[in-house]
Image (cartoon, rainbow, N blue to C red; front, side, top):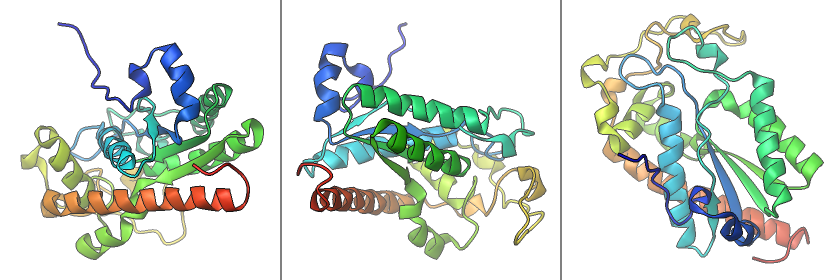
Length: 259
């Protein structure tokens, strides 16, 4: 049986190079989904962040088209910076500098082919700092407007109001998302409240097992995929609002022509 990637009309991966030659400079944004391959406690697969990146950027691209905003989506980058999870089996990590270099070289390639704006859409906390540094280099060295976009920042207030302060890694939020999009990937029998170890105010933990026994934070037994489905819808709208506002700001500053 042949292997087929589930590419849609907004995916660069389905285009030929002549089609890409026209599509890249015509798109309002090229978007790179970024995830990780790392442990997510006993009940979730190591691909959680990559699965979130894949599903949530599909929704973002589809909803953008309803606003006459075109997003051309790159294939999801599955590996990230996950050294803090490295002692848990199944975790695969790139070095911080390697990860940053990968992003910069992707941006350089896009700039070469006429990309106007580059979104690095992130779904893993460990990626945030190298993405920010990569965005600096892409803009300064390759003159490509770059948007480091951390999806969770746009849903954080709702998630905290519903789940409390510790809904993060493998907790209520991520468990709900995987139950919503990939319910067969969740081991329901292994869902238990996560055992918190250290609680540092200032000190940086060395590895994730310093702060959790099972590998997660929060209480995944309190997951609520129906609630998170609404969060996804509202968060997607907030992200698109922010992107539209940035385009308007660029236009007012004379940085780009109006879209």
